[in-house]
Image 1 (cartoon, helix red, strand yellow):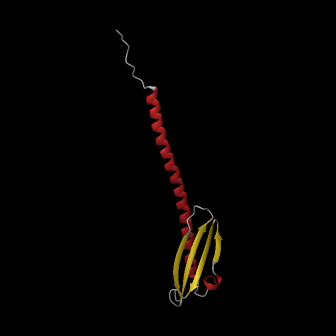
Image 2 (cartoon, one colour):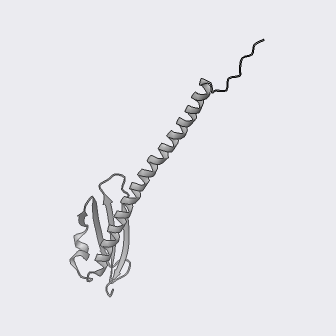
Image 3 (tube, one colour):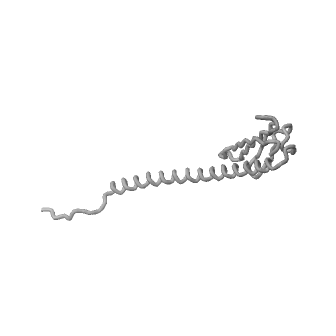
Length: 126
């Protein structure tokens, strides 16, 4: 008779399968983390561009109706702020007379930065 004790350890195959499952899970988690970092950076750039567009619009709204920055003949108006370019076009009497339609575009130097466009109609009495 053979009185050998039953082995209670893991076999090499069980260890390798466990490591493979762990590696697949770890790689999936790493991929999600990388995508999350990229999305956070993209959201930051989008927020910065939106803030610049709104600040530019507020500045243009506060100007008198006949100010040179609101002249249609000088389109497109352009200025830079860090890594962003802010352009605005002005159209007189659109959609009705005695108004100026202001279209602001903010673009970033980074190819992942989404451009922002804001439109506003300024009345002569506003």
